[in-house]
Structures are given as C-alpha cells and as structure tokens.
Length: 275
Image (cartoon, rainbow, N blue to C red; front, side, top):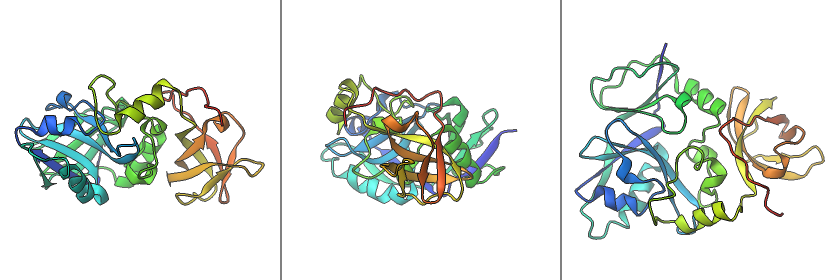
C-alpha cells in the first residue's frame, strides 16, 4: 500500500510572471526549462563561490513555478532570489499548498494540485503539492526513516550553509545539477570540482549502534583522528560527512555511538584528492 505523509517542515514558494523560467534559469543548478506538469526537478541555490544555500524541488502548473523548500528557509530563499529580479517580469511569494510525499506504491489519485515522481530515485516515490491534502497513512518521521535509508539529504539538517559543495552531497548522481544549461550562480566552482576531481569528503549513509549523535558531533577513527561530522539521524540510521579515505575502513565513532558506512548503489566515489 502506498504510504502518504504530510511534511509540515517543508513549504512552498510561488514564482510567477512571464519571465519566471529565464529568471530562475540563471540562478539555480538545474535546467528550469525542463519543468512541466508531471515532472519535478531537484535543484539548489548556491553562493557565487559555489557553496550551498538552499535545496528545493521545482514543479510547474503551467502558469507558476512552485518551489518545495525547507519551511525554515522559505523567507530567506524569497529574499535571496528577489535580489536578482531587477527588471525581470517575475514575482516571488509564499504559496498556500501543503507538501506531501508518497512512496512504497503507485501514485495516489489527486483531486487538486500537483504530483510528480521524485527525480532523485524511483524508490523515493512522489512529491505532492496540494491545497487539499490527501489523508496521511504515514508520519513525517516514517518518511525521514525512508529517505535516510536511501541516503537522501534534506535541507539544513544535512547540508551546511555556505560550506557544502553540491558534489559532496550527491547532487550529481541524484540529478540535481544540469551540466548542459550554461551559467548559473556558483556554476564555475561546481564544474571545476567535478572535472578536476577536487572532492575530499562525501555525505554518506551510516548505520548507528548506540544513541544517535547530535548533528555536528565529530566523527573519529578508532585512533581518534577527526574525519567528519554527523548530520541527521533517526532510528539507527543517519547521514554523516566523511573524508573519502575512511569510507572503506573500519567502524567509526561519534559521541558514544559506533558508525558503519552503508554506501548505496547510486553513489559514485571519485578518487581521493591529496590531503
């Protein structure tokens, strides 16, 4: 049976106006021209230096682009994007739609709103934006456990503002970057990181034995060397930012817990960059 959860920690931004596509196209990491009813895009806003500021899904109803974003970041995202509006015929405002997700079954019937497959992984199911929410058959915590089991990052719980590089967090493998669209803010650093193999760390799933460490807890090797930090966790699993050279090594430690790296099949690891 399809599981449906309401995500109150997500919110929606509406981008309207005849220049809405071209306006966003020069700012975000995905190709906004591909957005259409029934198709969602996963994208990010970066600093000019290529560091993460916000992640969001882009859906289109034909007249608006709707951004499914972390609720705590919605107002800041509107403010940041509005700085670049200039003479573009585009407007940004909070939207009233509720964010829901559906997984573990076929797409549910929707009386009103938008539904599209999650573009990252088929196992992630569907993103739903609607003013008439479907009856929930699961909780946001259930969804959290599911997305952690898949190794999918979510907002500031897993990504660090003005620090995370998209390729560290799987945006390449998970379809969050267009390599053909041309320039956008932060594009130069993102491309250089890819083509020069500059990555030194990755955000990866970990199995947790013991009490889940708080986000930001240092991750240590058995010898006590600091090799990363813990991010979000729930139910014995979580995500951690770790140096590449320890991903195939022995169990790690964070707080009082033992961490075992559980690499999903979708992750493609580059050669470790020189320390």
